[in-house]
Length: 325
Image (spheres, helix red, strand yellow):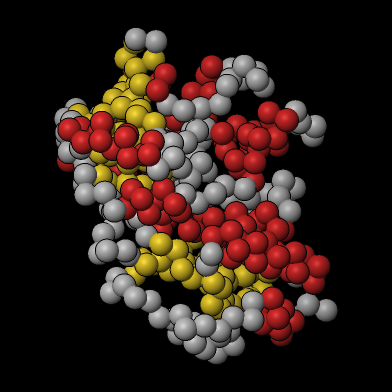
């Protein structure tokens, strides 16, 4: 029978951590950690079954790795270096030891991939499965990035394909057998990667004016990045410049592709603005450091969003995933 003592002993066994940065190790009521910076970045993120994930589509290992990646993405959007995390588990009755073992294998994989340490957590009985991950990051050189710092004329960039995660989830719901191309798209949903290295690079640039990660949809998160409509800041995006999957393989209708790219969410790419006069130098720095970035539009004073596609301008309504209660 699974109980909290089994999970506590499992964590101590799988994460036998004690270091100069984490002197207490796991097992006390709270964690003590040490960092060099005088500023830390903290965030938490919940993954709830039936809201954020479906266990038909994810293994326990993938679920844990995904939950950690999603939480760490918020640190990357601030330009911070991920250091520690804790996880609170809400487990339904009849959760098996095998499931828990595999779940913590996924967390262990995440620790290795991101070079972060698990420093504690909690467990509780629940009606449905939920993972609540809290993350701590370190600010380097006293530089971090926020939303709402853009100015009219700034250029808008993203770090990678937009819409793949949404298309991948649709494929999982529609089919059981997949081509290699489809599997690559699905992997964007199943195993997103927090953009740690490029996030740290972007976080140090004085001419980067604002940044966010694409969680709930490009159009919705762009509106959040620009600030409220009262700020009068708006943006124009160019469809052909937005990096996205080849819609001919697998065949995807144009309307579905537009919806996935603009409103789909779950991509966890970074969306940011750069001062226009520094754009050429910025792109040179990215190329020199082997970072791929894509210029997709610019900030204007319209207070609205618009999309240029095939030379024609259309209004763009901010839409995406929104929790409704």
